[in-house]
Length: 354
Image: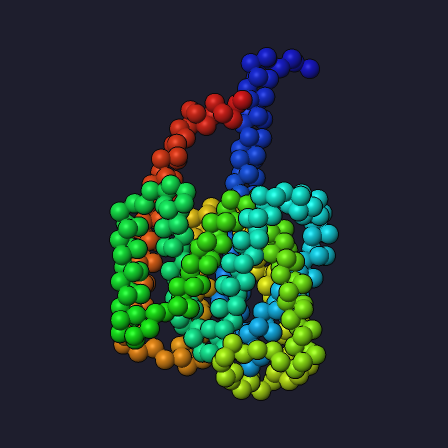
């Protein structure tokens, strides 16, 4: 057999390495694409879930908001126990319990999320879901403002414009209706501060939620026992409506109340999975899906009033949101262009031969 020249052997080796490198690049690209695709699916699931969750709370709107909130807290805490066990996160829970600073931070977060949940449940029970959705439209703008006040972040001109539009929308609604849209503002401010506190907390989403609900479980459980013994659940001084849906019989009602734990935990887990796979800017764009669904459900399905005054006010808020999104999109595209280094054929060949 005639010996193969060394040059041909070297060329073949380079060719093999090039082929292997190209295959590796294609595989990595495919895996990255799948990673992002799965992340987007998780994000859409989370925000669609939060949007359609209005139907769940409407189904139990005839039950005292205090009772619904207490059930949600207790059953959510219990539902998270097997999840923490499967994910082997109990050491993280114990570590947080021993940390005084983490305990204090999560205690504040617990108070904020309890108020947020309670006000949202109350809003649906008194047919003010549209006003609640306004709060979640405003929330990202509140978060930007809190970042400036507490984290030393600087606002860009477009963000200032967005905040002015939002402030004008709230002020117009307040003046024309002679009442402050306290539901919107409470939801936006409590969730904004909640995000600020959790940003500084070492707890992950699942562990943090377990800590928050567990801290409230004795109080919520005690209230459920008190309501069962005395037959008094407290209606927040509000005359509750009749059952919204005929199919909500007593057994179904209990199933819904107990199922509040999973209904709360599932979208949070999807959200956590999405943030691990997507850029926060992408998640930021998807987040407006939930309040949009809530608004459409409130007006088109629940029949909540939406007059000219609210149209102008919401229009200003939506203009603020669009300004905020456009500014974020410009920054994302600009950052992508700066980090995108063109790959010349020579450089690609050189890298493939390494």
